[in-house]
Image (cartoon, rainbow, N blue to C red; front, side):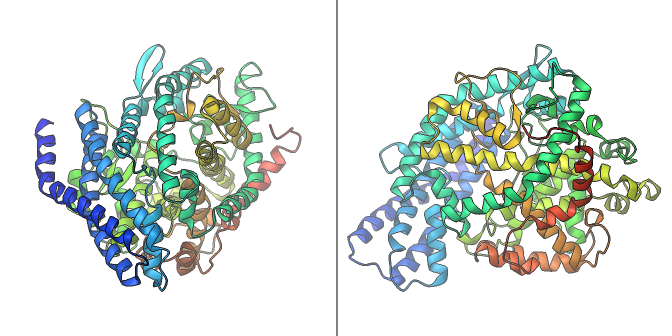
Length: 616
């Protein structure tokens, strides 16, 4: 490892010197520009050209440091990541401040104005310009992410890493064990983060205000080509469309858990105990399908995890299957470096961040994924999702630097999920995992849909409430003295779940979810939960599919792939409604396709719940 760190620092020394010098030159140029009474459109364009080049150079160094840190967590790699993070943040803040000033220039062209808007709002954690603020913010952010990666819970009194804990939560049916795992993880991982997170919010909010935003949440919401109020209204409208289906799923699942565990563990009414749902965060429930499976239709005739084990799949073969899906659509194979540099499994000798993620370190072809892949159905689907990011990253790599992103961040999440919806029994037959005579007949559709809903529908309120909590934290309506209470209140309001043990402000349960310490905005996942069905239905329509929507797989259809690539290659160069229209023919985000997909299940759930008291 020491050689790797030396290599990183040595290779970085030349560009780093250039970056520092450029950063100082840009600061001086910014000061001079500030003295000018009215910057011209030509000056704005020159500024953007300089900013894009410098940001691209520094971001490569920062990405390399972050990669090493997340795949080999030590005090030294923490320091490296914090250093490069500080450098990138300082540069980003300077550019964002200048972008805000140049936006006041008259006569700006469309691309110039759009790039300035992107540059002004690009930082997830903007530091204020005060001395040492960027370094402190970067150090805290690195410390929080590494603390999560080092996290442990316990099972039967024995320490257990996070990834193993996730698997155990999905397989144990012992309420006492589930309670121990849930509580130990939230106590040991979340609680120590509270003071650091409070300080992170304070610093980042100062930075957001210097950029002209009310707080960090307002900055995040500004990225959606809508006003902050319009974006909140959009998410409210989408949630209103899908909430009735979620309430039916919640009602049915609660009844089945009550049948399994009884009143002492899960009452027949009210919220669901979070640890009983097969997931550390109760965000997806498919791991308890065996408990809730409907009689008759519940046995769909195959288990994807068993199929993967039976066919001797390992981590690389799972990822190769995902690559083959994109190849079938006409996309070029991933570069050889992807297979050489990615982390597919958890190393036995060190701490790493196991949360799956996709990377493009040089904004061109250095594509990678980081996964602690288990041989199961969940990670088979996850691999398809993560490669969706990689193919999107490569599709727009010819765009200018500031356009190398999704139409919005929800698009980035939705592409892989759209492909994962094509992991149907018919698809499994085509890739040789399932025998044709094992394809479930139509009378098993309820089982297929229920298992899918336990992931897709169960996730939606969680996907919404994470940033609802953070927006409140950032705008001050949720003070530090109420972090955990507000988290629990929102989870009860949106999800209808409650913790299995009493929680107090001595804990910090939000920190036990990766995206909170890692400061990854989360509204994107809620949007993707809706958008993926719109994209999927459009792909199925384009492929000529005429059967039930949930049975469609567009695997192998290169016409779909060509049209999809046309949308992906636009990157962030156009407002997202235009990207949506390019692929599906409408500019409006809607849950109609999702509701069509689950329509047979909705009717069945309503019938099952007809004599039950739903709600919580």
